Image 1: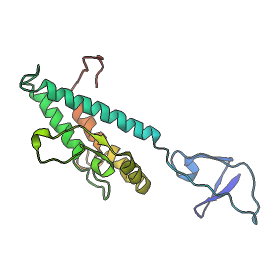
Image 2 (image 1 turned 90 degrees about the horizontal axis):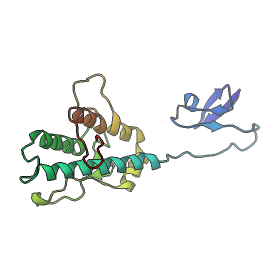
Image 3 (image 1 turned 30 degrees about the horizontal axis):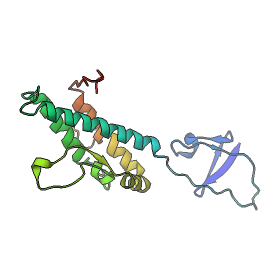
Length: 193
């Protein structure tokens, strides 16, 4: 059996390979290689999040979001091939509002803008307002360092107590509910987005 201490809390395990079931730290696996005596200096280490995959997924989402918003805007313009398609305009409005609005039940990181995902610049000229998203990586990393659980809820929280109320659902959960009623096919690649 292995006995160890993390942040002053003594823990034990039946193996020298310690996973998140024992530590309670999701995604963490430790391998204890040697026994230390009581008078020896304890092993010191720090843990940090590798946000590479998360940031890549966010960039991918933003790229697809911007592509959809741009295509809908072009196709539903007065001279576009779908100029009178109100369902596309409605979907565009719904998803744009969802990524710009707040998520209930959170205290600090209540919107995408709070974690660095925004429509970019503020302008008083509404004819030039861009609905395309931008990503401030450093603002996102700062939010993840301060409160990763709340950032996670901002993205994927699902309010199971009130399944018909979308207020406390995360942005991606809300978007999934919105777009499930629509089917968008990219004509250049033929894939459903």
